Image (cartoon, rainbow, N blue to C red):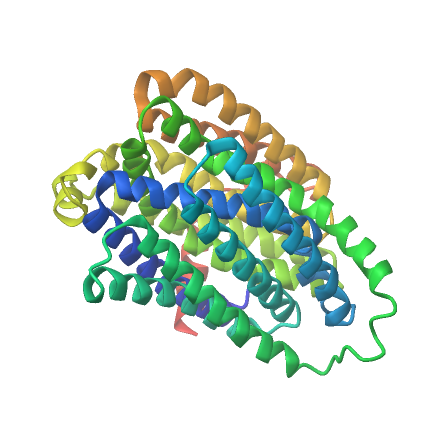
Length: 420
């Protein structure tokens, strides 16, 4: 296991997580539960559109970047993301009828982020992990600084201040990542004649690889829409704070799975990714469990002091999510293995199973328990889909299911790696 690459990735993700915590605090403390709820819905709308842009692009850009001219990949990715951003914004207007100002910010944010993400995924596929991680950190830093200026220098105390900071940050990062791409050896001249066949290849891989991401997002955030419709926007704000704190734990398994996914793609020995995935599952499970337990023990009074009196109930949400967060840390490692070995169907079935569990649990739990019910629904979904992936991993690789459970030797291995 390449510990230094994992630690560097973790360090950058930790920095981004701390900045995102600052963003959650700013929007909660200065905009209140209602403003935090509106900001959360903006983030969910934007992320949903970005997921559909990934149907021609997404993680498949990482997979194909070592194998194709990058300009052949970017041309179809740009065209598709632009079309989805425009049509998706129109769909949000039809569905929720928000203000015209909101729609303008949503379109601009989606376009700049989708284009920038395409750049970064190609760079990651070319193994520019340091550059990718640096840009990941700058994304969060830019939004936080922009919001601080808006709230305190301009006295702009509304959710649109957050929207504007987001648009400006991603416009700048899109330009910077474009400069980094231009410095690659690939040049567009003479290499665009095959872009149509590359576009078909990209779409084929993306549909298979990205479908589970779209369905998985519904597992994460469908409860927010139910809470907004059945409870209130303020309840969405409280739910978003609890979810943001609990999901901060995922920076550990995400750092591990990012490295594992890239290594799996490049490995020629089929046994090496299996062994690495087993180690990654154990490591992420232990570290995630320790982190989420520490977080759940934070008193509600502290949350109120930090975020405001509207957010005491966020502690109950953290407890409801705790088991699901640990389970999903395992899900990430197994999903990275199946994606890296092009077994997309297994990930897709796991995502569909999770979505079915989410829908059923939301309908049963949210009317009675509100935002906490949405958190329990997420935990049910995470557990079910993770158990499916674990069973499939054992079936495909011939491993025993118990091989994925942590043991004392893992603690010794971690200590040995840290000493190195």
